[in-house]
Image 1: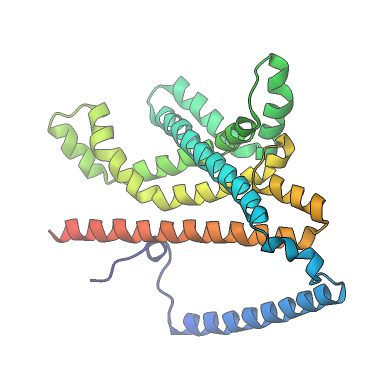
Image 2: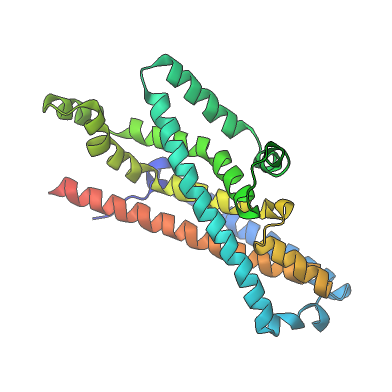
Length: 276
């Protein structure tokens, strides 16, 4: 039995004509990309960017250890930010779904505010304004908290969409069995809602990971900050940034694959339960 992924549910299966057009445009895009890559590589060669003095230090274990320490800080900040964003997003989602109009309006305003304000402004607020109130925070939290606050509104809306996607018939059935609204939400609705939005939550984790690149503002020793140190020491901007870009691409690729696997696993489990 074929299981549908999230993409299959969002988009219709393309017909023969559309598939042919996709193949043609894919080939054209690959040809243009190959040509652009060739031009870039040639320009690098002309300007001497492939000279060994820009690359030799990558053969040292100390370089990779230094980048690894920065990468570990980046991952910690992203994971901590994602957890905080999920908790804040959960409470905002609950507030927006409440029948209390005041709580609903307040939650809606907070969601729209966090979604509308750029992450960089939150970072500047924690970096410049918060210390003036006498609150002292480490550089780690000066980057983690702004990224979490910036993401919590999107997480709240994702969770709300998952809750709304749960068939209402299950709610009616649970209420008819005597469940309270609170138990209904935590026992029936929310577990199913999480299944619907896991890919979206992982995609938001990718965004939080990218937002941590602003850590250089608060001088947090993350991957980008350590990359700047290498650039200063070896005067090798292009090579260092290329290596760091590849590291970010690999992490994001892994997270996207994880999202696809989880979505497929959940679809398979749901299909199995339906068959039973």
